[in-house]
Length: 460
Image (cartoon, rainbow, N blue to C red; front, side, top):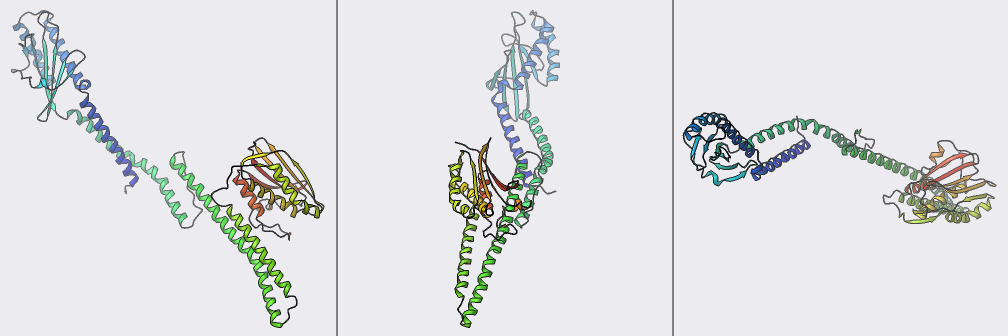
């Protein structure tokens, strides 16, 4: 089984935590000797020896011989049980009873690290020749007039206190190494899927998506990847469609110019220059059309830039629409088109004024183009709750359901119409509306055809 790098990082991090925690605990044990378990343990042992001695002797001092005879068996038994040396001295340092034949010299140990217990016992610690020695002394108040001092001394391996902790850490390490395997696999599996999908996307397959479950950071990464993949697919698809549409739009005027040029050459070669001016004017017209088309394509492409336009202006939508209607008034009068308007006072802040003007300019321009003579155009502006709604209705035959969506695609033309245009106006209007967190939609209505613009209300 191949060990992943992520697993190794998790395991090594866990090991580092264990080592640091061990060093901290060992440091605390050595720094707080007075609160260590050894001190409390020694205190209990000394109190146990004291209680047993007082239980056997009572509270009155009788004689040294009697006390030695009674206490020696008790101390021997306790010494074997505790694996320690135990003895009792009188108020003047004289030996009362002992578990062994010889009392050790404790003058060297009493100079070591000292701790005083809650009961008043003094506990000394000293490290010597790989061993740690503990010596406890407790002076009682009995027998009356002749109080005993209880001594207890034993040694143990220097690292006895830490060895159990090291063994526990070792067990934890083994368990962590085992249980981290499924945990790391669970983390690595979705990351591998992400890696594979990203690799396939790099090879051109933009349909790649990853199925992520849960709500953790990896799931959020998967959702972000899916959103990115979907956005890239749409951008590439849109770019391909734009390229195809541009090629189609430019091919027609180029073909007409080529025909005019060939006919012009034939006339010149035959010496017949009659009508040549017509061909030249036609080519000039096609060149002008292509120039305008390329300009509109460039303007439309700018809307796809990642950096949106400045959204720090305030627009008086009523004034903006009235200005545009004034500009289009001559065209409406020439075609005998009636223009009705119902405009509320609405001001929108946090927007791009020129962008909003482009939206309405394209919509009103299309309405005038596709309204027959003696027709009607109605423009309505109102604010409803948190939305600004601008509707433009013109008398026109109902559109097919698919056309209601496709008219917002670049270069889309309605069938059966020979009206010149680039097919970019409504596409640009929709993109600008989306930049403003709004939308543009088309719908059939009893009056004919309607374009509805919805924008978030941000009224001053």
